[in-house]
Image (cartoon, rainbow, N blue to C red):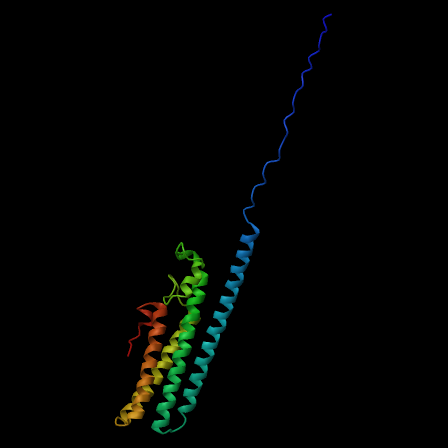
Length: 206
């Protein structure tokens, strides 16, 4: 007996596997990093604005002190010492103002600065840590007036110093005070001029 067999054709159905999910362009880690940098930007900007405003307040206070001192006939020794202290305070305020200006200018133009490949800090902060004014940074009208006021105050203090020094050339202690004030006022002028570059304000330094 011949037994016939039926061949049954079995068609295999391929198993569809889901395609691997594409990685999101903005990962949670990147979002966290961006948020952290944004917060750092805000913190640095707020601190710089506060420092700048405080420097301007100190300048205003020093100008008021000078106007008050002009009303009295003070002893040369006292006037020399007080002028030296005022000059130091003016230099400190000028340094704070310039540093705040550089910080704010650096935050405004991070794309114009090159960042070393091995440095994890954003480019804006690299400039903040340096001593140079950011490229293309320029004083606005208000800042220009403040810088000019710093230089004018330094000039007035220097005039007082020269007058005292001429009146008491043999007083060594007095001369020490006037020399200190003279150095501080010169540095104030240099600090302000560097904000605008070598030709800033067209001032002649002492």
